[in-house]
Length: 407
Image (cartoon, rainbow, N blue to C red; front, side, top):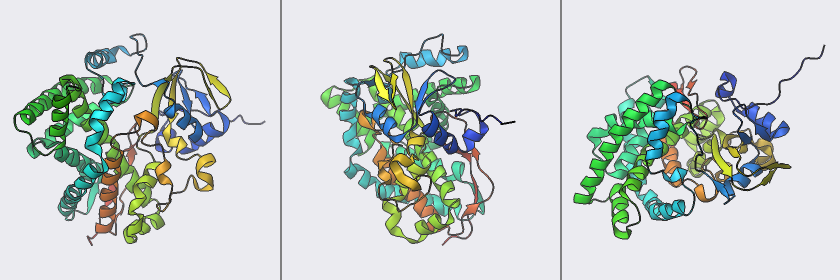
């Protein structure tokens, strides 16, 4: 009797998929590159097709949710989100273009370069604190701390508020996902109220006493050109905490775990400073913090010899595209921190919605990862990690490591 092989599938709730989605992506790319998920949404998995959808100007990032498709326990959160001005993540041109032009001048290479020294100091101070400990949870004790401290410093907010705001931010991060538990909904609603009050107070303080920080620049840009409303300013500042923070946490956690599983690559990072230019992009490519990005096609689109009709919602599998041998060649599944074209990954998206904070994330990832492994040359896994069960974001929930002696 011949056993039947299951059809390829995309199921982020499958424990095997959660731990290692890449074999599943391989089958999708080879056998069903335009795959209809059980939720009814299409997902494309090849690099060329993902890029085609992301770069198509006639697609929309706006959600088209209805109460019939939204679980009842999520309706209060959906209603709250509909009351708010959408963040730039959920806007199409021309509104997206207007806000992006206004904000992107605060994320220039020169501005990021100014943050290198401050980020390095934040990382080194934290490594000093950790040096007396034998074992840590790399996520809670390190990966979660660094990017939050960096964005907090960039915005010029009081350090005394870090612990509380970090808790609110963590609860709000869940809202990036399409499905939440009732407990997550309640926590997100409460955190949103607290965060809104906190940021409104911070914005008012910057109006009274401008300073040399990102929040002041956003406030002044809004006032000078009368182009960003108070609601838009609040939405933008909140987004910096939520989306910008969590993705960098995953970059650091996923990246360190990948290096610990590839000792020869870890040794390269420890001993060869020339890989600093490529290490963050290769780690982003190898195990992307953002696995999917959705678009609604607003015209008939032909992808992989199939016609996707106008109005369809399409998920682009960024993590799969980053491992597609049709683009990356025979080494697509290998980790190579010297890979010269690693920056062609799609972990930051592509087209008009390419991530505004890409340069900041690269810088934070590079500094956090290289300085950790060079400070602790005997760094090893203490136990197997656990993974967070998510559709859009991919990261380690807990990553126990032993630090060993500091260099």
